[in-house]
Amino acid sequence: NAGVTQTPKFQVLKTGQSMTLQCAQDMNHNSMYWYRQDPGMGLRLIYYSASEGTTDKGEVPNGYNVSRLNKREFSLRLESAAPSQTSVYFCAHSGQGIMQYFGPGTRLTVL
Amino acid sequence: GQQVMQIPQYQHVQEGEDFTTYCNSSTTLSNIQWYKQRPGGHPVFLIQLVKSGEVKKQKRLTFQFGEAKKNSSLHITATQTTDVGTYFCAASTQGAQKLVFGQGTRLTINP
Image 1 (cartoon, chains in turn green, purple):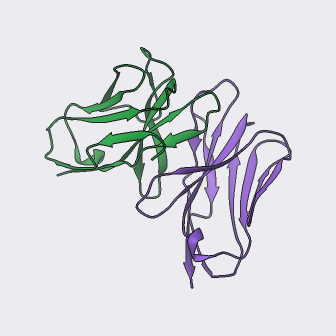
Image 2 (cartoon, one colour; image 1 turned 90 degrees about the horizontal axis):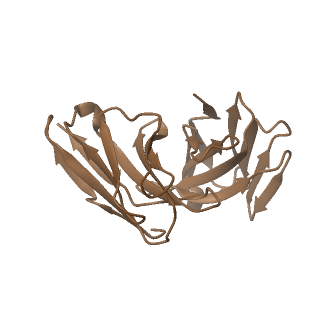
Image 3 (cartoon, helix red, strand yellow; image 1 turned 120 degrees about the horizontal axis):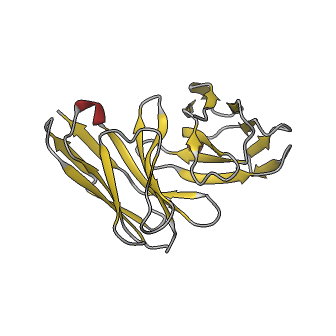
């Protein structure tokens, strides 16, 4: 999986619960990303981090927070999950060439 | 924000037929990338196009970048069952570190 690990692989939450999705890459890349994928919507960027210590909002940041813990790790937190956040979440990373390497994804269901 | 429109959303072909997906933007793009996602999998990088009018080939796949750098296409000749999946274009504008993905074209093949 292109040097990316994501945990957990699957998660079911109740509305209002919180959770953190973890992502780690071992290619020493500066840039990391969080996307969500919904049927017919393609991949939408939630947050990204161009380098350690920096984060920026993407297209759909509402309801999420991120932490770039160090160069390897970039976590995504849902403080109060809602059914609209049911989705598949992908972490990705890239080096100088912008080409992105995607992790295996986390399938999240919010009841 | 920048949008990338991709058509068609779905395409079903007989094995051996050709397949084409198109990507269009209203703004001039710095580069465009193509990704493939197998069912249940994660997006995998195929290729990047940077130059106006650029054409690249990978075996049966032909990628084109328009002269105005506002559109791109992916053409598969004589499809095989291994080509099944969703094909995404992803584009960035000058100076942008993030990609905007098209909605994807889901290709299914009748053997």
